[in-house]
Image (cartoon, rainbow, N blue to C red):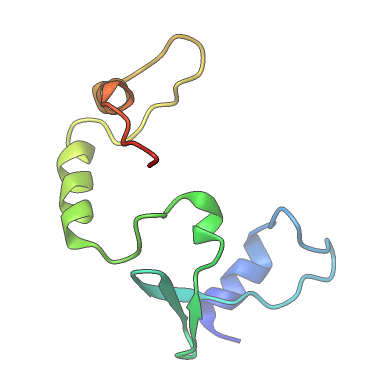
Amino acid sequence: MSRIADLDTRHVVHPHQVIGAPAPPVVFVEGRGAQIRDEDGNWYIDGTCGLWVCPVGHGRSELAEAARRQMEKLEYYASFWEFTNPPAAELAARPRASAT
């Protein structure tokens, strides 16, 4: 078991794991586009998109740069209650693309 897998097994509770008898984790270390690679070098199609948070693909330098610029100001804030932030409001106001 790798160091990361061992740390995970000893310290992380996963939402759907069997408590008391967790299976060894698959440790993903890299992503490119719609594929992810585990620490053993196996490539997978990221069919769940990291639970729906990376539909734009992994490893995109232009998105990393945009995130870096935003994180220098405000990395994140939830939109619960009446809270917002400029990127969330501006993105929501953009015209939607036609589905045709």
